[in-house]
Image (cartoon, rainbow, N blue to C red; front, side, top):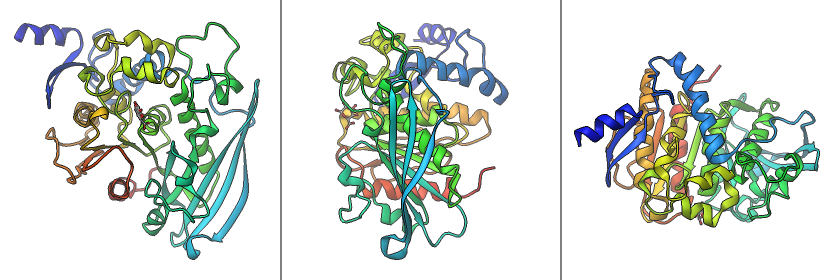
Length: 391
Ligand code: GTR
């Protein structure tokens, strides 16, 4: 064991001890060339960009475009009398064009009327049926309890992910891939997949928030469930404007450590959903140890910002323990910054949220789902983390 440990440390690996046995994980504070990251300046100038590039190159792919030059916003509906006068509703069309044509995102926004000045809030990347985000509020789904957010002084904003890219294997013909991708064949191994496309959409919503005086763009949390949770994490890694990143039951290639190979594995997800990731990710089917990153490093890319991971007790496919351990092993980066991350390595019991530092976690009793209980925890955590105004 000692020899293994020494060999592992020499290869820039960290011995992760936790639920379900020991693992060697890439050390978030060791550069690919083996040099140690000893200061915040080192992290920011060298290691963070390196890790982000590794995730682009090997996992989610590189976006073909950033903010399009012709991006524009149209508020096509507005009412100050939404939710019995408690909220102002805005329906915003975010429009853009590329070589392959025109695209648009329909952003739905409710702003709490009782908040004087710009309000903090949550942006949900909706990956369920649109009835879950009904702007008329005739249908109210626990998946997006907008009234509860308004009550607690938060903006409730959302868009449907299919506005960016359909969730089917269409060989990247439709959505923003069709608009912006270079017409090259074969497609580059590091070209963006659907998750990166959906994350790109959340960044365009942030572009809008920056223009709306009723919204405090410095205090926005991006939230997603399951494939939407993977998307929220990737969005938070790529776009540091989000002050809080929330992953609900994101599992494989979300918050869960790949090297645990518990529940859904890289091979399984690449087989079921090959278009979610870049082509290069297929190289790691059954080869988790060769992947130059693991998902705790994705969590660490949020530092010093706040990040929240939620799991469900009956969601073995998403590996709750693996999601928890990612939070534990992201901690060294927060510590380097003089901050508390999760602040514990003890997996909590259900319904016992950990809200000690900048990384929050809870385990909810029940199945794979996004519920009002989860949202309640996100808001409790945000009450602490988004309370102070960021510059
Ligand atoms: C599953 C998939 C998971 C998760 C889930 C969802 O079928 O294997 O990775 O993303 O879908 O998005 O509901």
